Length: 324
Image (tube, rainbow, N blue to C red; front, side, top):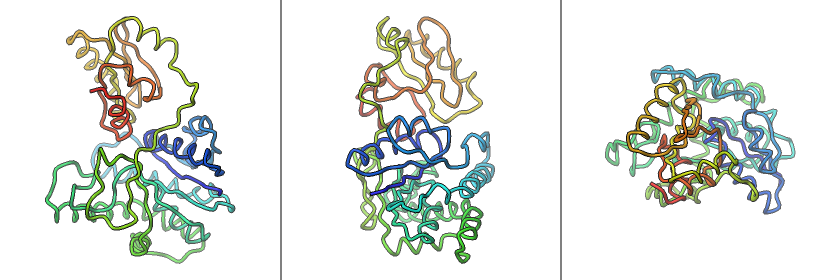
């Protein structure tokens, strides 16, 4: 089967699909991954065909208020939508859509008849069990949580409104009110697989059939991949270090956070590995090493603890490694 996975966003929004794609390839399928150009090396390392999606998450960064965030997100997905159809080969037999790309891919599937399946890294369907992930962690009670979940979906419809209008026009489809296509697919019980562990977030008891939690999709790591010699030498030079990194978060705060991290490590008498990430963390000294992107699966089992931004993938990797 010819399968196209479409995902966009930060590294954490894309990397898990390299592992999913590699698994599908090993099962005998022809797999391509459509994402932004920054992640082409990750896709090709996993042995998957790379298809380019036309935007960069960083291009709309640096936002402060919620209104600015909504405006930046709208610009991001509108740019994404303008080239989305070009990434889908006419021979595609199954389209796997991430949370970011689902609202665009559904319309493309309507125009082409391509079967689709949701492949999400976080729970987005409303539930009484917990509030929507985009609105924090404070429970509003079962009724309040479900109402907040529906409100979050309406806000997402607004973010995608311009992109959907442009995409449907380019595909020759009639205009559709925001959210109408999503509601239509919900009534049809559109199947969605969620690539996180039920040990971390149990499947909500009030979810409809077809919303399945299938376990974590781990980013692809080549069987012969090893940590760089510089990292191995640092690990061998003393006690296990503490890892500190904030992934795609905290852009523009690198200098302040680096100072805090180094001060905390030295106050506690600990060695540290600091991952630069989008914040641009950097530290010098024999007791602290600065690194770029490295597979968490290789590094985390070798450290004493992980200090991070609570990204779903990083959280799962730390738990898998069995470190605090």
